[in-house]
Image (cartoon, rainbow, N blue to C red; front, side, top):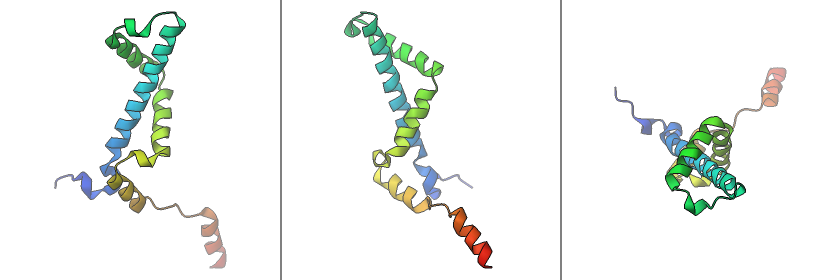
Length: 109
C-alpha cells in the first residue's frame, strides 16, 4: 500500500512549516553574524556572503534555541502557511476536551 501524505491532512503540509522554521532560524543566525561583524568594526559588504552563511550555519549548530524560537514563530503565525494547509489543520486539529468537563461528566454519572 502506497503511503499517501494527502490521506493525512494534518501531516500533508508539515514539511512547509518545518522549512519555514529553518528559513527563519537561518535568517536570524545571519543577522547575528552580521551584527557581530559590525561590532568588530568590519564592513559587512566586504565579507563574502558565503563566509557569512558558513558562520551562520555554525552558529545554528551551536545554538539550537534559534531553531526552537523560529518554530514557535511559525506556529504562532498559521497565516504564513498555504490556505489549504490552514484549512486542513483547522479541520483535523480539534480543541482538546476540557479536563473539567470530563470530571463533571464522571461526577454526574
